[in-house]
Image (cartoon, rainbow, N blue to C red; front, side):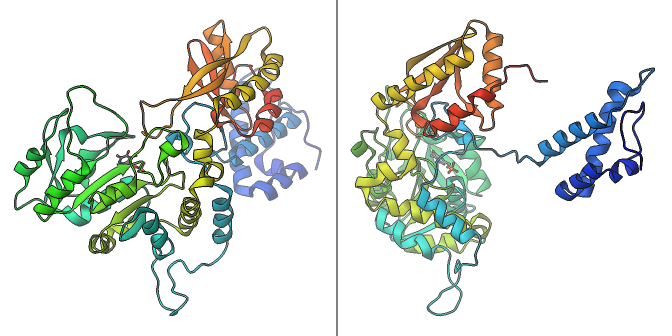
Length: 466
Ligand SMILES: *Cc1c(COP(=O)(O)O)cnc(C)c1O
């Protein structure tokens, strides 16, 4: 065949496919994918040049465009990014980072058959919760536990199991929206229970619950409103009192802790967050909490509580739809194991490690970024280190802030700032900061891999992309 070079019109797809380079693409990317992409690339050429009086088709350029397109299509859209947003547990950026031990164990079980639901002693069917239930109970003081896909699932499953078609009184101050369209009233409706609002937005008393209890009541519920706070003339019924009330009426008390924790955050100099063990000890019969919030583990939700209730929850067929896989169980086990040695937790658990970094160290780190950034932006932006406050994120302690340091990239024009921000998002490992006061801020609290961050700066491309 004649070499395919400059001609005024493109050759046919059959001819193109006979070319050696194209043949190699077929082996690498798959023939159908290559044909589809050839069609698209030709279509683009026709749109841009095909209508001209003297159309000029260049095969070499065609091959370059084709390869570019094939490469982009091969790219997985889920990428590793730098979260320098100042929100440590950023839901949109995937929340908690796992410790190395958890990553190693995930890799091990991922590529192998496991005894996920197989009892090695008896050779009969086992229960996937068995691998972690003992550890969860040890860390929370609960009698029994089960694990599902996330805390939203934990709540849905608990309510559906224990209150289907019956009433659940809940304080008007606790009918919260967690974010991403997850609202307590809606989840209760979908769980099939009847929400019975009690009290007022700012004040709810024990008598409000008492007056609401009737033959139709299935349980009492308390939602820990971790993501907002009402101040001023407020009153709520604390867990121990609500537990007494529940007991008196022979009803279970369900507490949704949201981002409950297993160790005292104040021991690490962090703001107080309710403990799962405390809720259990206060008489809650069921407690649900999230595994990828402050706990610092994989996405999952834990339900702990009374043996009989957990048994009822586990026998609900919906549990099957909400169960976690072997990789989640492996990661969760390794994360929970770290809690058995609280003295080392802030070194070993990434979430706690990031939250407890000292502001002096963060300042040192931020200062080392100034010169390299100046080399890139000299003349078009002003680089400095400023005081900022990091947030824990994921609805945890929204009013609490951790003193931190950020590199500020300040541009005199909004357009320049927009280009800079977008260029950082287009790096091989995109960098996500936040815009404040005409500057792009990179909170360094969550910057651990400084080398990669600096090495890719030379690839910043401030040219406009369409
Ligand atoms: C975050 C939160 C949830 C949902 O937990 P996920 O693990 O994100 O599903 C439910 N209830 C409360 C109170 C929360 O804070």
